[in-house]
Image (cartoon, rainbow, N blue to C red; front, top):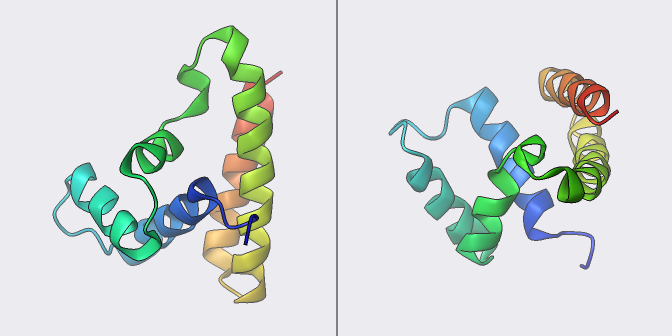
Length: 103
């Protein structure tokens, strides 16, 4: 599906990792390789999805924030469907943070 982008899949696994601690190694590359294994997405796209958009230049920052907010809201619904309240709350907090920093 076109809606299941590398960024959205990566973010979903990122939040699962935050709550389930699937990456016991503590190494980012281990999680990145795992995400690639699960999603079959390009490793550079996965790395980009894990990069915090507020670190971009002002020119790219606005678009990056808009895209991230869309992606967070999309994956939030998936976790809400699963009744994973703690992950939904975490995503809500991140949506608020990103929204406030984007203004």
